[in-house]
Image: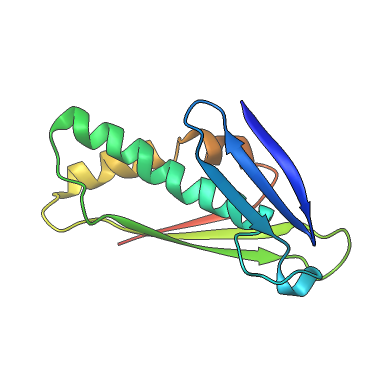
Length: 131
């Protein structure tokens, strides 16, 4: 379970039940907040890219492939008209050197079926870029 508390001033604190770790959010500057922490929509973007990396990590470990150094940068575009929503997510994945083309293809297929991407499909347009 995840427990969420409103802290005031457009900030929330979330507690992860199993681990006790905490995460704070803030409204973004363009929506009356201070933008000093991840916004809720930033967490959606973060969930997509970290889910992709995690699934690739599972596959890489299963095959004994080194994935250290892999990174993903995500860009979130918000709508300019009401209702406010995530209009597009673009992810750039940088795979580490030393992987051959077949390994890269396996990792790419795995990432493209991560639970977050599959859950968001049809609701938010996503672009994935690989290098």
